[in-house]
Image (cartoon, rainbow, N blue to C red):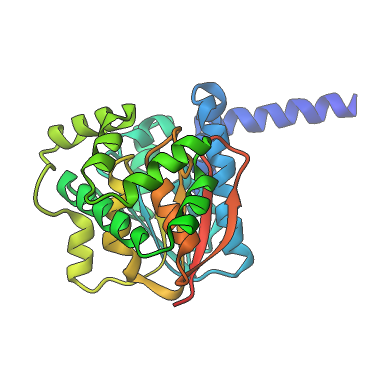
Length: 291
């Protein structure tokens, strides 16, 4: 009987939590998990990746400025995992309406976004994204070809495709590599975004930060499929020595987002990879800048 009464009391408390306004970070986390269970089940594995990345920072007692290029469940998690007195969170995301579904309420979205630094702007233009692609390609050419092929194999499921991309990296120019990226299904969706937001040419928010000598202690590169390599090219030097780069979607052909950036980080003496998620289909890694 006692156990039955405890269960009734528990259900009453859950009911009242469900109907009352959500105001705390833990409330927002609860709502986000509710939306995953009810509708967005495909977000479970990315969420597990985010937790693993953030826990590396938590174990290292991370403090400072945390910039996320993108936003969503990862932002809600970060706001719960990190001490707001020690970590300031900023998210650059042009589509905050997604939080209506993540947090199941317009009011919860507004309360959550007001509790962090939410910048509603495009991170890079399409021109900046392709400039970043070429810059990373050229940077990879500075390494030994065999080393590049060995490294890129960590982030591509097929040996033949790894060799193909190595050939593209060491080609005379980046036209063929760009063509392969543009043929990926993810590019089509991103192109519509750039056209719809009139962000094809010129500069965007990452350039704005660089021009103002912005410095971060950690940056999470998890925005658009096409944009991430441009964001990396512009922003990696804004990460303080001793700071951290976090990447999601590091495996090709599942994603075109960060597999080339991950390859560069794996090869570069300026970076030390602390953790790689090799269990999820999208993958993730966190690296520390050492030079």
